[in-house]
Length: 313
Image 1 (cartoon, rainbow, N blue to C red):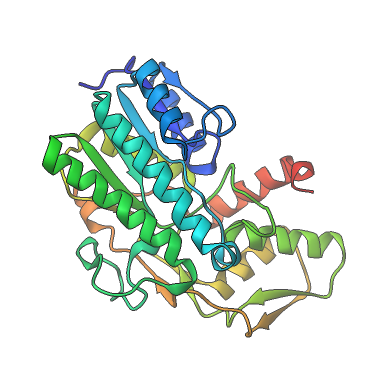
Image 2: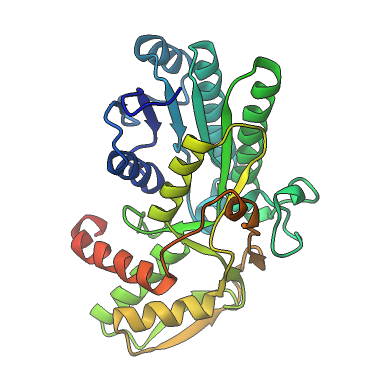
């Protein structure tokens, strides 16, 4: 039974997703957290993870820790993305089972769906085709993690659930030139172009790829909502059910930043999946919908970037 003083371990509490979930849990009145940085606990090391669970015995686990990155990082280091994420997931989920964790929430990703998936993507389309090659390692790892939760439930009677967020952005995002995702990368490009009076900003690909974007605090709200209200082997898409082209996103960021130059497209660079729009009706039917409009979320994210600009340079 979950209570406000249940001991909660948030794996990845300093990342964008994990920190947003931590904020939401505090806002909801939860008080008992165990938190470890990656330097304090390397989740890829099985013996260390097992000892941590034996010592701490958390009641609830939020598995938000992952090796993440944008399209460039995924292309350059596919083995790292597959290996690290498999090890993190396997160690945490198995140790949770061995040490009597009452509830586990696993964070997946919309990139698990097939590249040629019908749009919008419904939960039942999972594994109906090949994943996008540019993030194959990450996607396969996330599919394995979700399936591991499902199969532990079936075999051991655990209460492990999975959520599949669309592209996240917001407070705590990484603006690293190599590791950043599309929103953070776009904000940084336009801000630096404005500061440097650059005549143009180069956009990867054709600009026609479409992306569904969810403010990270909304994802955190959905995560806590499902943690409190759902048990079972279904997983849930978490998103807005709306998408924009990369060009539309770029023009919105351009306006918010106040950059006055032009856009140039580098069509030698990949677009990634043509579209990743999720059908979020199952979660809506279970009582949850997103709150933050894209423009409002982008403005909050840009302000956070300005407030923290020095650490990204």
